[in-house]
Amino acid sequence: MKILDENYFDLIMNNVLLPLYDIDGSITDADSVTYINERHSVIHLPATDNICALGSMPYHIFPSLYEATSPISMRASGIQTLQDNPYLDLRGQGVLVGVIDTGIDYTHPAFRNPDNSTRLVSIWDQTEQSGSPPKDFTFGTEYKAETINKALSSETPESVVPISDSGGHGTSVASIIAGSPSITANFSGVVPKAELVIVKLKEAKRNIKNIFCVPNDVICYMESDIMLGVSYVYSVAQSLQRPVVICIALGSSQGGHDGHGALSSYLDSLSQLPWTGVSISAGNEGIAGRHYFGTAGTAPFQDDVELLAGAGDTEFALEIWSSYSRLSIEILAPNHESTQQIFPSILDCRRLQFIFHECVIWINNIIFEQETGDQLILIRFKKMLPGIWTIRIRNLENEAFSFHAWLPAGSMLTNNTYFLKSDPDTTITSPGNSYHSLTVTAYDQRVGKIIQASGRGYTRNGHIKPDLAAPGYRVPCALPQNRYGNTTGSGAASAFAAGAIAMILEWSVARGNYTSITGNDINRLLTRGARHNQDIFYPNNVWGFGELEVNKVFEQLAMF
Image (cartoon, rainbow, N blue to C red; front, side, top):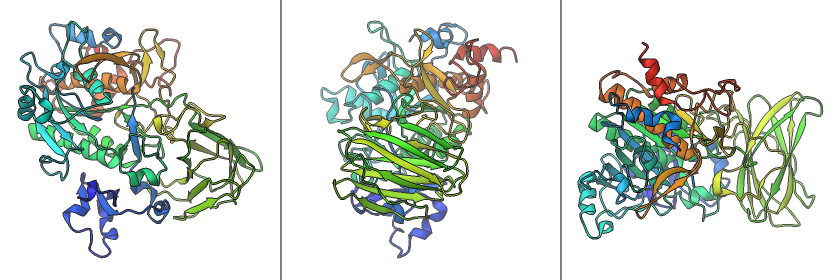
């Protein structure tokens, strides 16, 4: 099966363009194209070790690589007020919660009913090929509630449903949203009566990691598989005719940070549909030193970007984006060797190697990146020489210009590699720049201050993000092997906000008060009801429209 075969790239393709890649009729069989939605499919083409394959084929069809974004009070966000109100008593009844992540410990009490039956509607394990895939999907194994309950009644549950979540991220996210109450652990999810639909993502193919110079031991996930997971969750909700909130607690610093990527666009379209909410993590790149904003207003209209490469980071990629300029690039190594000046082109890929050390650099200076229409300079390093590198950017138009540069997010780099003059703004990870989805940053609910690591807006094209700040410091959660703990970060905050969306879906759809409500409608209700600090002007690029205060939403609705 090509979608599982390392000999094939999984490339995200606009359905209209599929015939252009079917030169010899080789992609007409079902195994060569995996349908996602009415706009996108995954096309499986023969892979190569040549990193300049990204050059002969466009940047935007290669799936970005994503990582997890988190590894308290309930009253801090108005959640418990709504749970305690005997008239509202909003706990997610009739609502589905979709979590596309690292898996789940389905045996945990946090995901069981009082009679010990499962609260999971289904699990799609993309990593397990021994069973039947979901309807209209071609790989993985689907486990429905009946099978999960059979596993729970077995002495060896893993022999019936062999799914695990060794890292615990998916388990923690799902439990923050919808975990069953535990008196002994002093724990409850936001909507403990909601039901869950879980997708365990398969790890990214090595061939895509190689294309983007990501070390093989880094655990990350492909954009295409996440999109398929979203499609699965939405299909389950449609088949059951239930409202659903989808939580994406994953992030990537690849792409234009402007909401134009394939996953961002997909989530954007779903957010505008009735009964469908989307909550996305803003990421944790705020103070990581991995974003640079460059500008030059006077001659010679150039800017030198200084990058410190740590000894442990031997391979990685760097992206430079600019909207209105025509930029060239030159790279100076720590040992004073330098590359030639690389001018913009359409699909050219240059492989450069130095004389006095073994570092290899691939540069794509793409004048017209097809997804955004902007200039992208993609730089990929292998066998990196530690020290301070200088990346010289010149505007060939000899006029004032600006640009953004991003290093990879999360564990794709150590903390020893960063820009010497980094900028904490415009650090929201993809797909958090999606226009109509709810993008959530994290604040410390003990002291009412933003968590400094949280991603900041605005988007590269000036759109207001994040939308809201939600509790994100040491949020109580379930952990694998029947444990409880806590987690910090914007992934936890996005889970908290997903629970708030589920509350509104219960009131509006399940209880019949506003049955045409869309995810975008819910987002606007939440931003209008956000709590403000009188010393801060809103909206802004740190807090968005303010702190999550879902109780205020219903106070406003009561006035209509």
